[in-house]
Image (cartoon, rainbow over all chains, first blue to last red; front, side):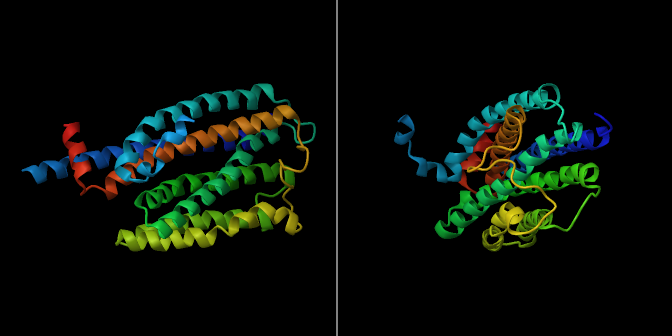
Length: 46
Length: 249
């Protein structure tokens, strides 16, 4: 990278990490939410 | 023409939009993945080394699309917030909430990659110039929007307060865009302008546009995914969500 590797990879890697973190975050949020709603639904029925 | 026959108002209801968002999301996610692969390939293997900036200019393929997305998402968020306030449509407020985290992420990326480009090119990570400072204010506006929404317990009041902040804050977007014309800044002028020829080689421009499209598709996919969570969360006491949970058993 002509001496600029740290700057270039620092940009691309942080971008990839943030996007991956956002994807994991929303998937996790949905999982937790669905579990909570399923529990609520069971309690309402019971 | 087939699109004209669709009753779009139907999809302003969270119950109707929820399944539609679920169907659209994988398409946008797929497009984002393909465009990202193509964009990265072009960024590293097709676009030539810049004669002035060397390899460091490759940061621009992330920095410029992230900066564009940060402004674009904010405007869309403010439009949804305004629609929510004017027409009292629940889905608009949910869309605004779903856009904010992704907008904040792109704003942070624009600042981060800008700093990483600035150090070798300008000799400094940061300067308090108009473009950089107004972009930092944009990050604070996103954080303010999310914090305000989270801090107020009553969802209606939270939506109203954060919506107002989004609308007032939209004035910052033209300030970011035109800052390089209005003030003497260290930051260079616009990369692409409607009334001027682009100041870069065509292949560099195409690479930048492919990366922008990739970010755009990603934003739509992730926002559709997140808005489905928002809908379930806020509509959890409604009959259709209860039925949906029954069906999932």
